[in-house]
Amino acid sequence: MGKKPIVIGVAGGSGSGKTSVTKSIYEHFQNQSILIIEQDYYYKDQSELPFEERLKTNYDHPLAFDNDLLIEHIKQLLEHKTVNKPVYDYTLHTRSNKVIEVDPKEVIILEGILVLEDERLRNLMDIKLFVDTDADIRIIRRLLRDIKERGRTIDSVIDQYVNVVRPMHNQFIEPTKRYADIILPEGGQNHVAIDLMVTKIQTILEQKAIM
Image 1 (cartoon, helix red, strand yellow):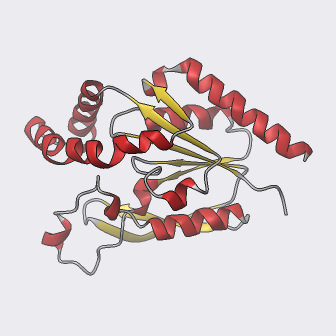
Image 2 (cartoon, rainbow, N blue to C red; image 1 turned 45 degrees about the vertical axis):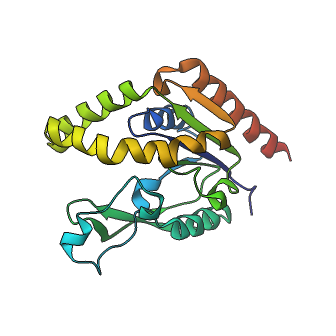
């Protein structure tokens, strides 16, 4: 059995640029052994609820996530076992019957708005990142994304942001910044910070190789 994989947590608010940071790190190591686990895939199965109830789901609340399954899968990957990552169907607001087979790798990036919120998840991480971006930038990014990619109206995006996203960010996401080893301002645009992260990961991998 090989060395224990490295787990890197990448958290931050919606529109913070955490996905860009994750992709940048991934691209640096894509010729090596690396994988991304998105917390978004681990929303709870709601198939037993009526559709009208599912529509009320608050996707920015910690209770929306099936962290038990996510933790189980991370532990299995750390034991060099293959897992079946669930797939969430946003049109039905529940888990689909599809899964994605994920093979273990040397580096696991766990990315999501609340990956630092659960102490059990934090305890599995070697490096904890929080991507910290000003609220005005985050709402603009979310507005552009939801209109362009999800066919939303400006009014609906702003309404959701004001009534759900912003209060959930302030209550649950922002406080997890204190758990981060590294706070990374401005997301994917911060090339210096990303390069430092890549160097740190490379150093850990090299140390593991000679252990």
